[in-house]
Length: 219
Picture 1 (cartoon, rainbow, N blue to C red):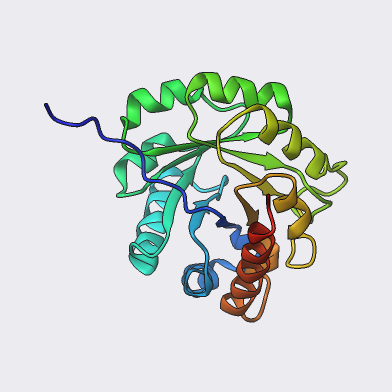
Picture 2: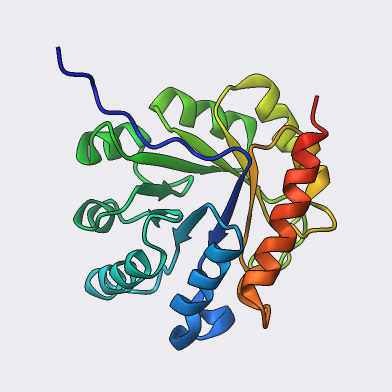
């Protein structure tokens, strides 16, 4: 009997880079992401909400070519683009289609992540069949100005209640990632901390090293 395909496994701990070409400029984005992957990024989330489908597919194709199989690549929200590309899956916002609907389109062998901002949202994502959670926001960040951060306590409550990998996002740096990992995170996600750096590879390496050190201290 043929085995049922399953999604690729997230590395644990997992360093995720979320793209934002407004941070570094469109011309530099692909090269900066590639350098960050060399520095230790495990998962790239293509998140460019203002691009139309054809533009997003073109950018996704260039990213896939640049990073090869050295990191996983998921597309934010756009299930159609994720399916059209040799991607590894999709990252769904909290108000996006349910993970179960995305699964019917993408099949069993692609990753489906869900962004959540509450324990209840995490529970719904688990019930819908998400493979991992992106939990925010941990700390104040440029990408969410004026938003009161939930803090690592939210991630701790989610990690204690559900068994899915939970990645913290929002204002995370090499100096504070130990707080997120100590709360039970399976990894951390960043935007500005890497993309805005003049040395994205070095920034990724420093964050990865700090994350690994914190992971080794987890009980």
